[in-house]
Length: 390
Image (cartoon, rainbow, N blue to C red; front, top):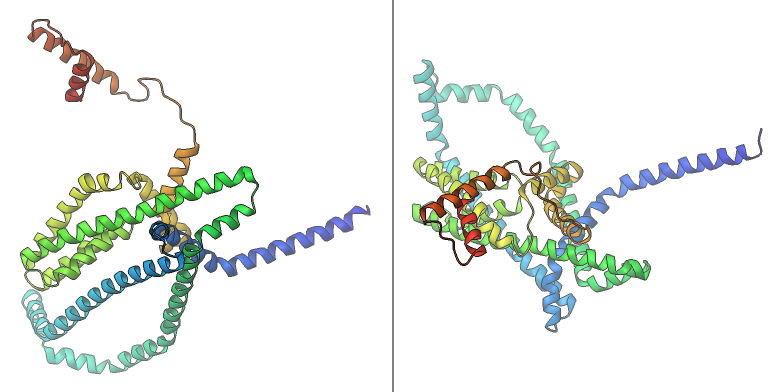
């Protein structure tokens, strides 16, 4: 046996053991890594506001605390308005439930030629009371599991908030600590990437907040005009959900006011649905490009793909932070990737040659109509013609 073989086998076993240990530790700490990632992106969104207050002489700790208070009050107001709306709607439905059951039984009897009655349904429910008790017992047994899930969620939220506060309040110290572990030649690159992440993430949050405010005001005005109940709460719901929930937020935002309208006058649901669709088009083509032009501009296809990838990797958390991450990556690529001018080639835009021939034909026709005269301005007129023809 070669002398090196026992040593090689021992090193291989140690390597496999270390790999298994690292894999186990990673899976045990993956929740912590996800919370750190979420806290990091939240701190990037909050740090510009804290920096502005710090530039005016406010201590970073106090500034971070004030930002946290503002965000907490906004979230609490949103949840309170939504909770009030849901409780009242459930109370109304419970009050109308007997009449709704009578109407449903009458409709079933007329449609299917049956002779059902409310007493028969009550007798059937009481007959199956054992099954109901079994389900109630199962629900009671699951209370502890639900309680544990809620407590775990609260602990994770507290952990994310704690790390976010630290990352935001100690932002300069965190960057200095990271740069101290890198050679001087790499420190500028890291700080540059950090600045891009700050600008893109903060820009994304602020642009979404502005869009949410505009959406809330627009929907509140329309809901008030048609007399929809809880116009303020529903408008805030539409504004927040449509802007901060990726991909499906628009559908969730419009579904709730439509359902509320159905409980009153069904015709109002048609008006609400129409307004939601029209406003979405106005936002997509007029408001969104102008508001996000100076903050963050991510192509819709890139945003959609980023949300899918984020959801596949980290679930709902990945979907929420996918667009800021994509905007940061896009800004980083745009800064460091060198681009070259592309020569005109019909294989790039196969319709450009046809459009050029059409422009030449229009120019010749105009010259013929004008008696062969040309515009003294020359190039500017040509550009105006080209814009008009395009």
